[in-house]
Length: 311
Image: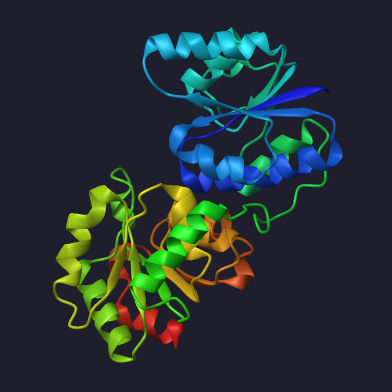
């Protein structure tokens, strides 16, 4: 196997679950050229791993997709590993004329695959480990630690931000309250965050709330009821800058999200808040390094649950 291409899913957590497979590939097949197909917002983090020889960006209009197929064909890649099960991704791999296309049996267009493996439940690192065995990888680590590298330029920007906010040499807690627009059921009630943040600031804990630009309005609805100042970090340069900030934190507190997995992958202890999703499948890895608060619904989690575990 001289060339292999990985087709990634679109979410941050799913990307992090795939990284141990890339690392195992590089370790077992050091002379194999590794390609990845990923969305633009995830490309910087993926590049930081130094595991990938070439990244193809997916997404965009029909013309861009046609160009992507042509670019992949030029590489004459023999094997594709499909983390993604989307019809669009399987069609893309098929039209790219990759001879061996390996993916999950649960894919709706599985007839476009040349080899399939079983998948249990939702996308997870455990499922990706099973997928990796189909190409002879039996050395995949069971967590995503020590794979991401912090971008040096992003680290400098974050250090300046911390200095400007008089936090450069201080311990601080990163809080992530928001979920993607399609995952709002994972969010806690605003009053829970208000009580939690007020109690933490009363204990003289320094707090940085991280969020995307589109989340600022909802974050401000919470922070206007917090009596002491809480900093907001909204990375200008995407996930590589977010990773640089989180890597300097003492603790991460947040809902089941890609941001939580990013913190865990950087070795930051998490207080991870779960509603109806299953942390045994998609909890921060390794699971026993972190504190899991699990209720039937995220709306059932109260401030006392969080505060007791932070103490």
